[in-house]
Each structure stands twice: as C-alpha cells, then as structure tokens.
Amino acid sequence: MFYEGTIYRPPSEAKSIILQITVGCQHNACTFCTMYKGKSFRIKSRTEINEIIATAHAQDSDAERIFLADGDAIAVDSLLLIEILDQLYEKFPRLKRVGIYGGPKDILAKSPQELADLKTHGLSIVYLGVESGNEGILKSVCKGVTAEQMIAAGQKLKASGLTLSCTVIIGLGGKALSHEHAVDTARVISEIDPQFLGALTLMVEPRAPLAKEIQRGTFQLLSPFESLSELRTLLVLLNVTHCVFRSNHASNYLPLSATLPDERTALLKTLDSVMENKSLERLRPDYWRGL
Ligand code: SF4
Image (cartoon, rainbow, N blue to C red; front, side, top):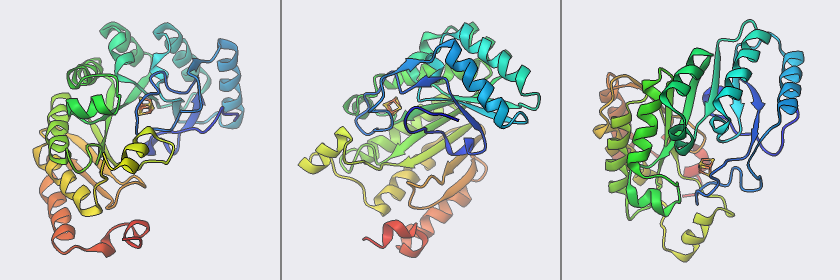
C-alpha cells in the first residue's frame, strides 16, 4: 500500500488495514504534536480513493477491520464518507468495523443526523484527542477548541450511537499545572463518558513548538513519579459509566489497563504500590535507566 508520509493509527487499530483517504491534519497547530507537520491537509480525490480501496482489496479481501487515516479523516464530506463506507462493506464481505480519527471542530461541524447516518452505514468507532480538560492548557497548546466545545463534540458523537475513544495526555500542563490538568481533564472526560479512554504520557520531539518552551525553562516536564501521581488524581476523579481505560502506549511509564469504574480500586492499588515503593524496576526500562 502506498502512503504519503508517515502513517499514524491508534494502538487498537494495529490489526486494521489503514486506508489513507486524507493527508495530514486540518488543524495541524497543536504545539506538542509533530505527526503531520510536514503535510498540507487535503482530501484525496475519488479516483485516488478508488485506487486505494482496490489495492487494499487485492492485498486482503478478507479484512475485518479498516481504519481511515490521516489525522482528521472525519473532515471528509459526510456523503462521500457514506459512499466510501458502502463501498468498503460491499468489497470486504467480512468487514466488521471501520474506525477514524475525528477532530473536535469537524465533529461539531456535522449535524446529529449526519453522524447517525455514518453509524448506520458502518462507521464504528471515532478516536477523539481530548488531551486536556483545562481551558488554559488547551489554549496554550493551541488545540483550537475550548473545554466546553470538546465536551459538546464528544457528547454529540456518543448521542449518534458511534463508539467513542478519547485520548488524554499526562503531563500536558507541565509541573505548574499538573493538578489543574488532572482535575479538569477528569471533569471533561466524565461529562463525555466515553466507552474507551487512553492516557498517553507527554513526549516532546525536538521539532515540536513545545520543545522551545522546555529549552527556555517556561515548561517543565513531569518526572516519571509525578506523571503517575497526576494519572492517579485523574483516575480517582473520573466518573464514567463503563469505560475501558488503557495507559499502555509506548510513551507510558507504567502499562495499565482496566475497566472503570469496576476495577478502579485494583488500578489505584497497583499505582500506589509502585509510587510508595519508588519501584523503578516496574517502570519501562527505557525511562528509568536514564534517571
Ligand atoms: S489535532 Fe491532533 S493530529 Fe492535529 S495537530 Fe493537534 S494533536 Fe496533532
């Protein structure tokens, strides 16, 4: 399969065929993110999309999962997305699920009916990068939406029947706003009440705008145990109905996975035992070797 530039997908789409129907991210302004910095956003032409689908079909006509890339493919016009979904389910008879990244502004731009239609035509899961629920942090990292707009986007998706997976970034407020970040993010995620929640830990590439703040000393990264403490605060305050929580991305110091709220006590016990004993050996080796 030919891809333009580096392809990113959520960890849970590891077994999916990735179809790049758009290139880049329409927003492309977040100061911590370098994923699509070298790409100008564009929606691929119908001809290109047909070729991509034909190539994927030639490679694996039995595919059960497909992920539509790049970073904000939900920006594609809903009628075109529906056409693509219909084509996919027709061509791939064993297809069970189609996932997509959705930016909050593009989710808000779609009507409830459009989202419901996408669900009816087989869109299964949308991945929304919430990152933080703190207004000041969202502004300083140029996320492009307020906390209330983020809540509205998440609730709108859920109301349409689509499955929602949210991502937050531990450490995004640095040392200065760690507590506020945890408290406000817990509030926003609780208001959205997604079915899935992933917590990444902030990793800043040298070419990310946020790296300059770190160099200037105006933004201080959390230590591994400060990150775990922030995550703990978030987990304690989360008020969700039934949410599969994962913090097992390569960026995380301690791989964790649980269903909330049922397994919260066990999750906190694991975190507490690592934090109280300063158990460096339980953190991912790549991190604690350098401490
Ligand atoms: S919206 Fe997502 S993909 Fe786009 S710049 Fe921000 S974090 Fe990166």
